[in-house]
Length: 294
Image (cartoon, rainbow, N blue to C red; front, side, top):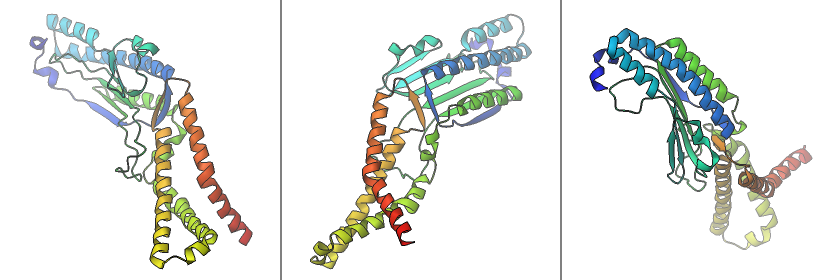
């Protein structure tokens, strides 16, 4: 194949569009339909690729190039599991349930030619879904930052209208599956909760503690009392930090539902219990006190 390619094939004027994917909640059926949509768009890319080849090559060389494009420019699906499993295929059978890893970390679609042929395709489709979740007890990353996620779309081609049409078509398909938990993964959402809800609640917890344990605190030295207040204040913030991470883990930016979500539903119940037992009573007492004093 290297002998058939000259320097003309490198003179490409490409239009590109790329961006992060919107947060989605998708299932296996959606992935199959998305794959079929990509195949349809890839057929259009092949048509443009063949037109470009006709302008660059002639006779036997053109025939070989056209055959190579038709046989090799296909949508390749790569599926990775959290335990290092990897599947790769250009056939829809890759989505058979028994073949899939129990926990999928990434699904990548691409029509890039995998062979080291020397041929550079001018029309490229790449879409990657990143299903990795945060570590609940990893406090190294600031919760004020946007959730890290590598889900991306990249479209490139010689024809500007095809690039823009393909990009907009795929983005609109994904927007229909946009999940409502995206708010949890935005930048500074943690700070809004912290300063407008959690910190006022934290001070109220200190006030309740002093009100109920006033006699015990009276017999303690001032440094010890201050230390207890600081400890309670910090522990309450830590509980919220863990709860916030837990919410981001339970409602990931990009979610793939491969089963009936029994485990996920159990975690939702745990989160509801956690909120009901810790934060909800405090918040309700604050509201009641505000209105009772007004």
